[in-house]
Figure 1 (tube, one colour):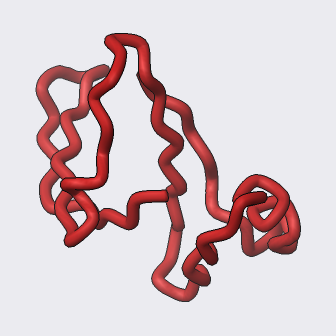
Figure 2 (cartoon, rainbow, N blue to C red):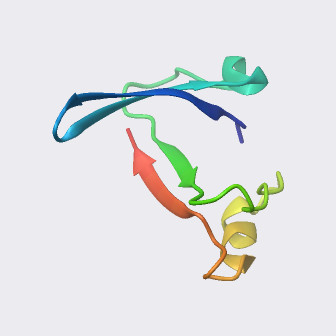
Length: 76
């Protein structure tokens, strides 16, 4: 798990957005394969709780009440 924050977002075209992230954990990101994927949790408000770091991160994510759960997206 890597904890990052959105630093900047740029609209490159009407359907393409570049997101630049920052954070103390950024050096923990591994670059082992060209097809790696990341999960991004998008909180609509600042009251969203921080997801605890556990082996079962997905179970922890699903345990958050659906109305409070951030939106999750997968990117490669």
